[in-house]
Image (cartoon, rainbow, N blue to C red; front, top):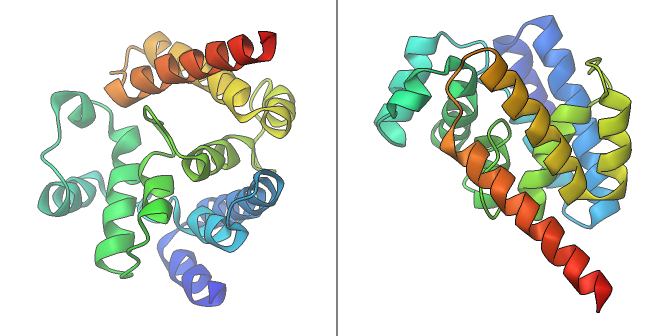
Length: 195
């Protein structure tokens, strides 16, 4: 089953991006096993999460606007998030995968969103902590991801928000909503722990 999709992404992606996708798939499988979600589905979402990453921006916009929604000015102003939307569309429309959980993992792996599912958080964090990542604090992110998904999400969202704002790019509302939601979930966890 996986070989077919691996062959597809190998044709569409550079060697670097192909390697990254395999690393994310492996990390997604590990996290799925740890946190009790479907590890085969997580592995497949990891394989496919960047399927349109290297597609020209205008083609990605066309896919999103044809099959999903008209882009907002914030989305148009941040081409780095096109691939999460176009990827979910591509996987559904052209690979005929209709599993909403898998599509959500692809759709929100860059911005996050409020009320993320456990599966979506796993794909988001697998992308952040895969073996090929070498950004500052990656070891801290990996440790947090292995200990508590909400704490890891908070740390990653803080990093993302600082980066996006620091570069003067548009911050997607989903990222801000995700940050506020994660903070609320952590506060509620702490309240429950006190009882």
